[in-house]
Image (cartoon, rainbow, N blue to C red; front, side, top):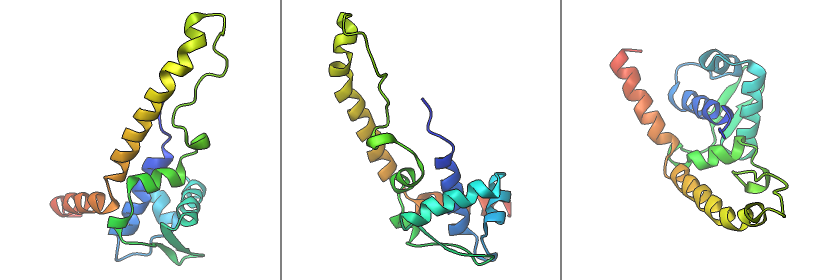
Length: 146
């Protein structure tokens, strides 16, 4: 299983918005930075806007963070852009064989463990903020001289 690239694209987009101060951060600019189609960038911006992480001024107005970077966690971003059905990270196969002793019991054995893994991942995502990424990116840019 792999989390889609929407999450890392969203972090990249938010990092651009947080760090770039001397240029309007438009969907075309973001598409260039992420090397992604502007339509995909606009969709992600829309998802981020819907949960109050960014504000977007239509046309060439640009995008802005709606809250300070330290108040935007990776968990906020993940929840905004990932399509996790019913809040479940793991999708269990639909019809294990009830006639098989393993198939009959696998749900009971795995459900709690998978929930535990998801909670651990969410705790870790909640502990990382956009301010962390902004600080590290700023250091990299300063070292490399833009």
